[in-house]
Amino acid sequence: MTEYFNAILAQDVDGTPLASLKQITLADLPDEAVLVNTSYSTLNYKDGLAVSGMGKICRTLPLICGIDLAGVISESGDSSYQAGERILVNGYGMSETFNGGYSQYQRIKPEWIVRVPESMSLEETMAVGTAGYTSMLCVMALQDAEVTPSDGPILVTGAAGGVGSIAVSLLSSLGYEVHASTGRVASEGGFLRQLGAAHLVPRQELARDCKPLEKEAWAGVVDTVGDKVLATAIAQTRYEGVVTACGLAGGTALPATVMPFILRGVRLRGIDSVMACQSRRQRAWDTLAEILDRDSLREIYTVVPMSDVPSLAPKIVRGEIRGRLVVDVNA
Image (cartoon, rainbow, N blue to C red; front, top):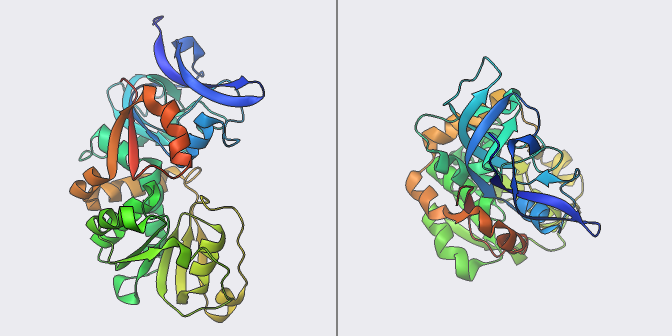
């Protein structure tokens, strides 16, 4: 195959990695065993940083951006996978040190592959994407720690974003009482209630200097924000509650004390979606296929053409995007 196809390629522009739509060939792809005809990718916060050059995400240049992809295997040099199989990949350093999903074709490592559950379409897998998969890892961490709906409410921070919105939907569908925190209560409150949020928490109630211990409120937390929001959430978590930390949209600092951990037995669980093992990934996706409310999912995402990604990237970094953006790489 020698014809050209489209990809979003990050290149060095006066010392800054900037991405734009380019035409490439198979010769420009890495020498990996499985060739995928990509159908969809996504636009996440991390993608926004990579494409816009606002964050130091791409560590090797030139590099195809996109931390997710879903498509159909075109050729396989690995006996575990066959042409025609529907697969997805997310994480593993794609868009950092490895070429990613913003390309109509991509070559990937076999050990990265997750088979798409039969009940899910390729579009739905990317509506979930890294954001929803990360949400599922957080929910699994709460469940594995035996946090049940009867234990009390769950706080979700950054609830109007990609990870947060799916976390609200997943938790509510499992019977948890969800308290959704956002800085956009006026504009996004109705959306979050549609997803199952029982209560709304204005971000400013959490994004502040907190006491080492505050009134106990949460049996569990899904935090996508970090910094003061995470510190306050920890200080308000109930005895032996579980806080899952999966994001840093508000900053990388953690201005907390050890008091919640040694006096209340609060458990802080870091969620790594990038390098999680293949078995945990497959468990997450299989569980998503079983429990995800498809009607709620349709409320969360919008499909956009890959050509729009460069203009949308700064908007997602500025927090101007609601829910999820699915990228049609062939549009």
